[in-house]
Amino acid sequence: MPSRPHLPKPLIDLATVPPLLSTGDPNSFAHNTLKVRDPNILQGLIDAPYFSPDLKRAFKKFHAELLAGTIEPLRENTPDHDFWRDASKPYIGRSWLDVPWYWAETFFYRRILEIVGYFQLGAWHEKDPFFHDKQAELVPTAAPARVATVLESTISNQRAAISNLLHAALWGNRVDLSYNVEQTVGRAARPEDEHANLLVDDAPRVLAFLTARPLDQLAYVADNAGTELALDLALIDQCLTSDLVKKITLHLKPQPFYVSDAMPQDVEHTLRAFENANADTRGVAQRLRAHLKNNRLELRVHWFYPTSLHYFEMPDDLYKLFQTADFSILKGDVNYRRLVGDAHWKPTIAFDYTTRYFPTPFVALRTMKSELVVGLEATQVQHLDQLDPHWRTNGKRGVIQANLSIAHS
Image 1 (cartoon, rainbow, N blue to C red):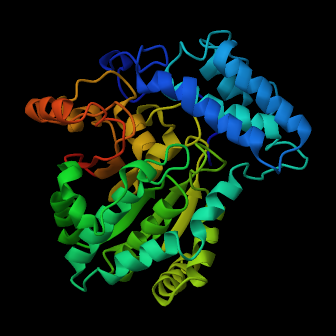
Image 2 (cartoon, one colour):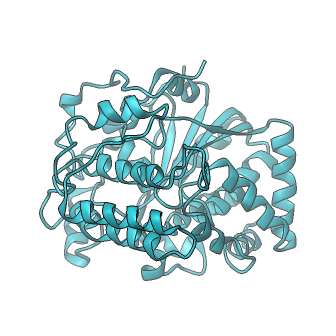
Image 3 (cartoon, one colour):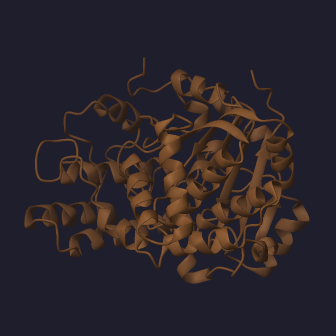
C-alpha cells in the first residue's frame, strides 16, 4: 500500500548533518538561483505565448514575491497540502533569500503548479507547463542523434559497452533546462574525452560489481527528460539486452519538477522520438517496448520525488523499494544533493559516510551544478580552486561516486 505525503522519521541523526545551504548565504550559487535563475524561469513563463492573461498576471505577482516579497503558503486543496503545510511551516512569511536552498527550489516549482491549476479541473489540469521546452530536445537532430552517435562508438564487448554508456549518461546530465550548462561548457566528441573532467571515477568498481554476477533488480532514478533521459534509456537497454540484470525499475517524477525532470509520459515521448529518428534508436525503442511489455522494465513514480525531503528522510515504502534492488543508479545534481544532505559539508568528508543510511549499493552520476561535493582529496580541492573559481557550479566537472560497502539485505 503506497504511503501518503508526510514527514517521515529521519533515517539518521540530523544533528550529524551540517547547516543546510541557504539562499541567504552571501555570494553563493544558492543566493544567485533565487535572485536570478528562478526569476528568469518565471519570466520565461510570462513571455510564453500559450498562457492566458490571468496566468501571466499570476506569474508576475509570484515574480514580485520572489524578488521582494515574503513567502506565501499553498492555498489549494490537494493530497500533498498537509505535507507542504508541515514542511513549510518554518519558512512561510520569510524572504525567499533567507531559507534553505533545496526547500526553496522545490516549493518554487510546487507554487508554479498551483498557479497553472495542475491539480485542479481546468485548462492546465495535469498538463506540463514546461512541455514545449522539453519537446525541442526530441527532434531527430537533437537527443536521438546524440544517442545514435554514442551507440555507433559502442563496441560489442559487454564491459566496454556498459562503461561507454555509463559515461554518456553521466555527461547527459549537463543538459538540464533549468540550468543548461552544456550551452556554456560544450561537450567532447566522445565520452572518454571527458575523463580529465571526472573528479571521482568509480566506474571500474561499478562495472566489476555489475558484471560479477547477473543481478535480479536494478533501481534507476532518472533526472532530466530530453537528451539525458534518451541516454539513460540507451544504458538501460544495454543492461537488459546483455542480461546484466533481469529487471530494471525506472523511478520518475509524478508531476512537473525543475523544468525538465522526467515523468512517465516523457519516456513515451522519447520512445516515439527514437522511432521517428534513425535505425539505431528505432532498435532501442523496439527492445524497450518489449521490455515494458514483459515487465523487465517498469516505470514507477512516488510522491517523495517532487518534495523537499532528502533521501535520509525517505518514507518506509520507498526505502523498501530500494531494498529490493541489488543495485541503484541515481542521476543528477539534485539527487546528489538529496543523497548527502544539501549542507555545508567539507569536500573531503567520505562519500560512504554521508550516504551510509542508503538501503542498497549504488552509484551517483552527477555533473556539478551546485557548490556541494564530498569525497575529494584536499590537494584536489586546492588545485581546482586555483584553476577555476567556478568549478563547483559551472557543470564542466562530474563525478561517478559509488557506495558499494552497503550490505544488501
